[in-house]
Length: 162
Image (cartoon, rainbow, N blue to C red; front, side):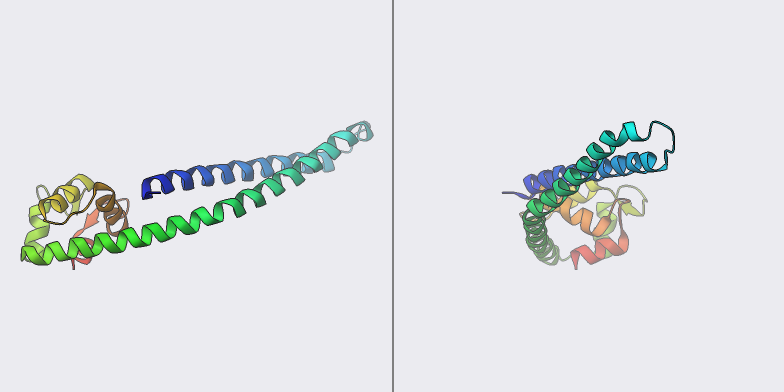
């Protein structure tokens, strides 16, 4: 199973856990509202309280089951990311060393204009210009690792290629 497939499965598992957590919050609010109600028809709402308690128990059990079922997926995803990142870093660094360009000159050639950060397309173009056999998935993973969400700064670029 590839990294993209594992990331998609992990995202779906996280969404399922988030939905279950939201359901638990809703049930807890309803139970709290029932507990604070002190009207004359409180005894008539006893069946609703029993059903809410059952629902709370079911959502907790479903969350535990989902958590344990997705634990292997999380471990596999972390291992694949670690391995892919290690291979990509080594490939990029080896290709950078073979190129023999100083790191400042390499950053200046990779960035468009006088910007201080590399965008993902710029980093992908730079990585493809090297003789490294990196997939787009590996390049994107390197970018996320070193550049984050805002862009790859000069120090982050240096860290990635050295």
